[in-house]
Image 1 (tube, rainbow, N blue to C red):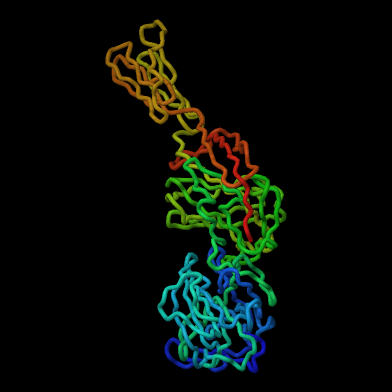
Image 2: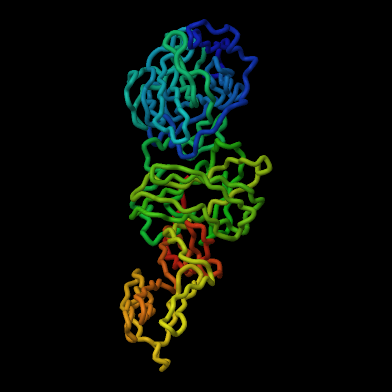
Amino acid sequence: MSRALLAPLPLLVGLALAGAPRPADACQYANCQSDGAVNKPADFALSLPFKSGETVKVLSGYGPNAGSSLHCRAQDSSCANDWHALDLVLPNQANWGKGQPVVAAASGTVIAAGWGTSGWASYGQRVYIQHDYNADGHKYVTMYAHLDTVAVSQGQKVAMGDTLGTLGQSCNEAKSCANFSTPHLHFALHRDSNFGGSGSGGSYGGRATVPEPIDGYSNLKQGDLMTSMNGDEEPPPPPPDMCNAIPPQGAILEDDGPCLTLGGKPANYGEIAGNGGHAYHTALDVPSPDYAEGGIWLLNFEQAGDYELSVFVPAGLPSPANKATYKIAFNGQATKAYVDHAAVAGNWASLGTFTFAAGGDQWVRLGDNYDLPGDNGKRIAIDALKIVPGVAPCECMPGQTDSLPCGNNGEQTRTCDGCSWGPWSMCSDDSGTGDPVTTGDDSGTATGAGTGGSASSSDSASGTGGSDGSSGGGGSDSAASSSSGSASGSATAGVTSLGSASASGFYDEPDSGCSCRSTSTDPAALVGLFVLVGVGRRRRQRS
């Protein structure tokens, strides 16, 4: 609503939930403030409420001093919290866009449509939509007020871009309102608001919500010009044929590739050298759990399974934060992981191993929210995300030995190579000749384990070769004996790089041998893993 109002009109909710009248002074403007406002989640796709390609101007911005004195309050329990409402016009259309379509900013259900009455009458003809998005456990409602016509009804499901009505100048049950001179759309986003009150009701209580980023725009101010992308493919997500599915051997998703979407304007991000030659960085400036900016990697797996996720933090990150918050959505679940960007600069940091389903609807998000007060204003890096197959549990401890008797002539042994058992040593027969017992062949499969042959009163029993071609256990001349050989050596995994023009060659893992994890009480040791990063093409994100 524009500043040209002749007098402020309190947006009273006439009835409490119990039906009692609300105090008349509950919505007076003396308590107008932004305290308690929250940010829209970065992965809640919200678009400008006009057809794609329309030029949109901010007639009145946030708060009572940016064009409208009625943009007021943020968490008043009795009133409409419209501090972060926007009055929008179409400057390239006649009469500021009056009569042009107003469309849904996101999908949802119409919870009210038509004239506002009593305490809500100043909104004129309006539509409220409760949105489908609830990934963070909150409820979001958008409001479209001062419409000239209404094209939907209560209970109707709408998709982003569906027409709700037309831009107008209505208020107080009249289509031409004397309270303001410029036709416009009053647009607001509320979180966890109640709905009802006097007359046909309205959205009140809850929290005023910053509707950004919206079509890639953030830090909106009075007079800003934007172009609506409502109904476009981006943002988000990129088309599936551009963000390729992750193969079973894993992938590296570069920050400037098609699988990452950034929220906000490019001016909100710095750029530095990182993995593959490039990385973004931005400031932590929103208290947790809310966030406004950040990046989201979209994950689409060819094959279900366990995959370890790691992020690269470039060494040149200025003023690195001590606790960056990553949210991982996988196989219908979600959890958070935290990385100290100051401590791991110049290295990969593991987010953990997760069980992913085949297909999409899975992601990793890094937001600009801070948990530590000292991180306010410090910066986080948005760089490459590495995905590798989950590593099998270690079978043994580094240096651990195992033994079996060799007839009457000593024992045979095997040693842990850092994660898996090595081959059994050969042992002599019991005839005193010193000739070794014939070993098994090396035809074991890549995953099979050798099984020692058994014998009774025989000097020449032989075992079957283990998975690495090692000998099985020799027979005993007094009792049957068996043993198991286990694969040794290092595994090589090919990892695809998606979307980087310069990430080629090898990346280095620690030189400590075996990088595997244990699921038992045995300590985990490390497995050497060498991963070839394929060369992909670089694709910049569109703002």
